[in-house]
Each structure stands twice: as C-alpha cells, then as structure tokens.
Image 1 (cartoon, rainbow, N blue to C red):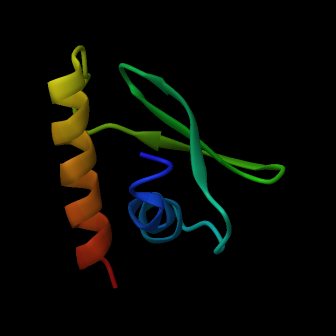
Image 2 (cartoon, helix red, strand yellow):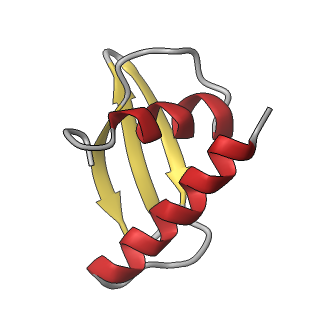
Amino acid sequence: MNADHADAILLHATKLLGEDDGPWRISGLDPEGADLTAGDRTARLAFPVRVTSGDALRRALVVLTKEARAAP
C-alpha cells in the first residue's frame, strides 16, 4: 500500500480523518483498522468491517478509498 497507493493513504488521512496534508503511511494493521503516521503525527483509520484475510483487507481499503474520493 505505502509504495503503490500513497495517494489513497493521503486521501484516507485528509478526507476521512480530517488530518492535515503530509507524507502519510500505514504503519500498522489489525482486524479493526490501520494506524497511519506522518512524521510524529498519528491517526487511526477504522475499517467498515472486521477483516480477517488479505482479500477482506483489500475490499475494506477499496471501500474506504471510494468514500475518501467522494468526500468534499
């Protein structure tokens, strides 16, 4: 994600979490969500559903990215 979809991670941080622009990266994942970091800033992105597989993780991130792209 960090290497291939940095634009989506930035959208998650800014559009869904209300964070300021920055070099946001995913620093951790668990079934409930993702930890994002940008320098010394941190944010928590909750998944819409609990994920227990790689495929479920991909689907959750796709849903969140669509929401972020649609946000004003």
